[in-house]
Image 1 (cartoon, one colour):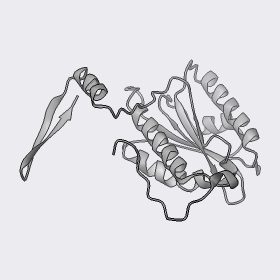
Image 2 (cartoon, helix red, strand yellow):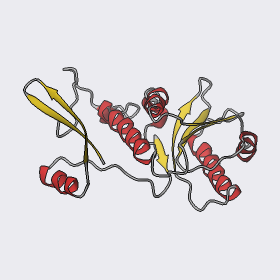
Image 3 (tube, helix red, strand yellow):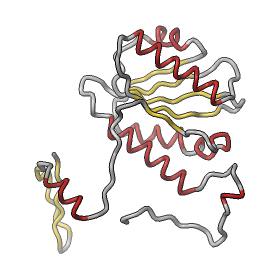
Image 4 (tube, one colour):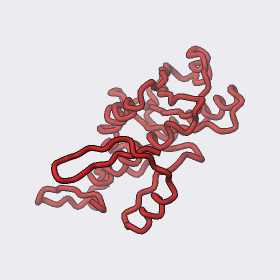
Amino acid sequence: YPTPQFNHSNQRTDYSKNPSTRRPDSLWRTRDTITKIILANSNQHPTFQPTFLTLTFKKNITSIKTANRHFKYFIFKLKKELNLTTLHYISVIEFQKRGAIHYHITLFNLPYIDAHRLETIWNHGFTNIRVVRDIGEVHKYVAKYLSKELIDKRLVGQKAYFCSKNLIRPQSFTDQSTIDNHLNDVKLTVLETINHKEYKILKYKK
């Protein structure tokens, strides 16, 4: 479809009268955007593999504003510790059953750092870090941590995710002339030819 299509029931919901509810199409777009940002940036740093990092709070911090302040200061300290000018990442919030906030972060250019050293820099609770060996894990990550959290009413009026500066933002084009212009700028090699009934399918790679 040239634009996203959504199937709704016959009963329409007036979201303007229910500020604690987020539109289903808004949730879809948010999940889709996050997935595309992760995939677009996963191969931009050849010397690094994407890393998944979870940050939790020992204290029952439920204020998004307070938690975000601690998170931003952690990023500042991490960059200083590793002598980095830029750190590329995307972060989403998850709520524990007790209401406490924790963060799930995908980092795209994080050098090796000892897990204990990382936990000391965070200094607010437990941390978990692992390297992404298979890019397919990105989809599992997004499905696991984003589906239910984006519906949480605590995120209404709040950012569901935030990114570092200079991340690549995927672009979508629907008009044929723009698509043709972009394809003309890309050198493609036929990867595979598939004969399907009455027509031929060509798979390409850059």
